[in-house]
Amino acid sequence: MPAPSLLARPKPTYWLSYLLVMPVAGFMFAAFIVVGGSELLGHKPTRPEMLGAWAVATTLITLFALNIDRRKPHFELTDTTLRIGRGSYATVIPLAEIESAVFGLPDYTPWWFRLMRYAPQSRGSHHFISMMRANSLFIRLGQRRYVPLCLYFTWMQNGRELMEALRERLREKLVGAESYTAAEVKALSLPKFNRVGTLRE
Image 1: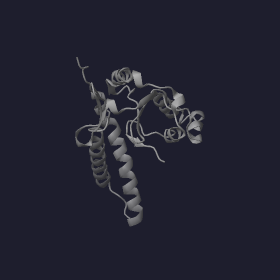
Image 2: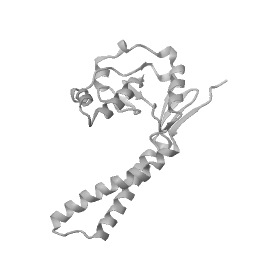
Image 3: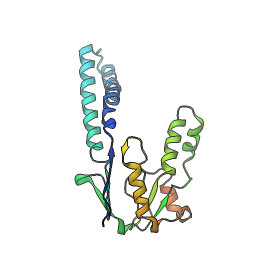
Image 4: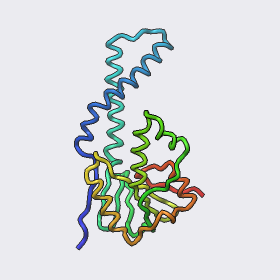
């Protein structure tokens, strides 16, 4: 009997966060454009102009982010495939084409990333990215393609369940960290999570 498909996507609370994040981002963007433009034109912006620019910037940024989030953070695991994204932007990976997988990315990172752990302002980001690296599943595909997959996010519905189900279905293809090549270690020093990449020659 085929295993049931698993769908991982943002929780409803993720979309509610737009109400807090997007107005702030829109204000910062509008302030940068309006203040910079005012300096060049020698015109002091009025309150209605600032409010109008804020509303337009917030709308544009929200639409841009929604267009990306609507299709990219969407993952589906079936009995035979892993789908990343949805619609015409989806990448479908047959499980049979996965050559091997490693749990956890290599320890090597750029020097500036290692320094982030000592700065109070960036320590949280360093910890978060380190957590992602430690809990990623590195998937090797044919033709030097790969995917560093990590869905262990609190805002991702069924993310943990999909990751664990995928590890179970790939259990016979799981190999150790010693299998990493020099090219893979270099590419994964700054990985693009949850996207198909290609190793350079």
